[in-house]
Image (cartoon, rainbow, N blue to C red; front, side):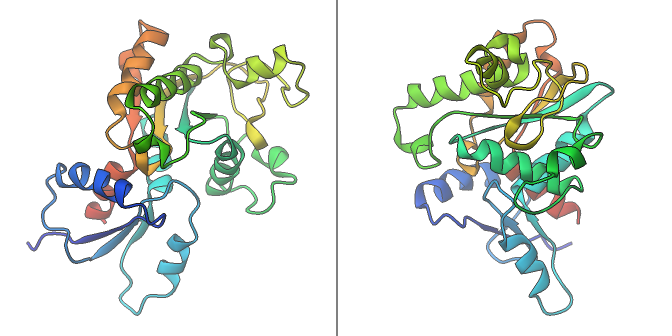
Amino acid sequence: MAPIRILIINPNSSSAMTEALKPVVEGLGFGDLKNHDAFLIACYSAHPLVPLLRAHQPPPTKPVLGIFEASVSASLLCLGANESFGIVSTGKVWEGLLTRAVGAFLGGKDGDGEGEEEEAKGKWRRFAGVETTGLSAGELHEAPREEVRRRVKEAAARLVAGPQAGGRDARAEKEGDGDAVGVKHGARGVEGKAEVGGERKVTAVCLGCAGMVGMEAWVREAVGEALGTGAEDVRVVDGVKVGVGMLVAL
């Protein structure tokens, strides 16, 4: 059987991030990737290239997947009862963007965010929300390594430990932010607002940027420090790795 040939597209035009992706993909051992039988969009977002490439191919169409869709799908498959997944990403703007993207992916409205919170109730109970590092995608590779490590670990710890660890909801409540509608670590609505409805343990953490490839060890370290017992149950999901695996399977 001929090797599967996957074209991995880095749409942000960052050569540093593209170079960072190469060893991760080559390490998967799926063979020659120079030509393509499928496409993987290596930008962690509801990226327009995904539907565009699906729609504008001559038959027979080839599989197209984004690393965002791949990581969310893989995370959902890992969850047990009363468990949830969350995302660690870069700048604060991604908290709202990715929350809405998850809602749209799970069947909610795909628009400007109005009315999404009501529609999300009952559908997002397995989504714990988004925690961010305050760094841009470029700064993940340009900022001092120890500073990047610290910020990634802090975001991961907030996500898995919930409001009691000083996450966004706890900070908002302390500061009197009207967006905090509850402090239970459960589903979150538009712009990361918490929904009251019982606690769900976070057992899957998505790396919410292609530039975070290779940072799984930092996230695992943070999870271990934040949780202690039970940390071994938490999976770190790299959308690049699972995306390549899914495309090979397709």
